[in-house]
Image (cartoon, rainbow, N blue to C red; front, side, top):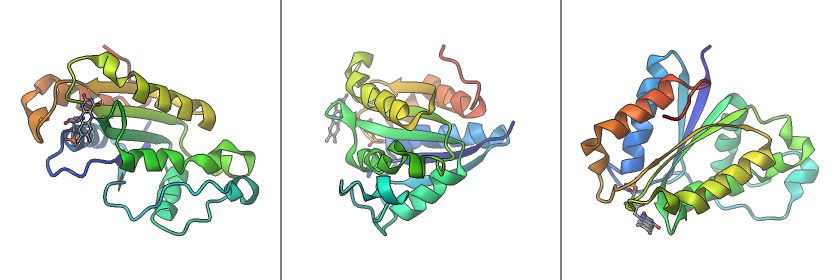
Length: 189
Ligand SMILES: Cc1cc2nc3c(=O)[nH]c(=O)nc-3n(C[C@H](O)[C@H](O)[C@H](O)COP(=O)(O)O)c2cc1C
């Protein structure tokens, strides 16, 4: 079955490792016949959540910035992929802003508008320890619980420091392509 996938990226770096893996994922997803749209949170003109919780009453976010486009994509897509560098063991700020803007879907009036049923996570870090991604993973898992959506698979790519280094890791590229090809049926190695 073809899927509608929104890939949310958040690195400011040209040739960034997370963007390389995002592109590999997209290649696989499109090869498998899925439709992919990208929301680049690093380029988006978007505030963080203002926290007035008006969305929980109104059923929509009152901020009229690029978050409007984000919410349109979240309504359109059935699958969302968060792609982030690991910053201080958490999400890079552009992706964290996106996560905070999920707040409308924590309450009934907006929840029905969320098309996304499954989320995946791809993250890159300089560390060699996969355990350094645990804090980020906890935030991801918590967001899925609040949004009542399924975990479609996670990939924590270690040992990536300078931009472009991901190209030296064939196994990483292949894994990201495979995640894209197997959306809806992805299983960890
Ligand atoms: C502000 C900042 C904080 C970082 N914090 C971590 C960290 O906590 N753990 C880690 O392994 N790497 C950390 N890194 C390294 C990046 O996660 C790593 O270089 C990653 O591959 C960058 O992805 P990108 O090329 O897509 O931007 C940090 C880098 C920056 C600039």
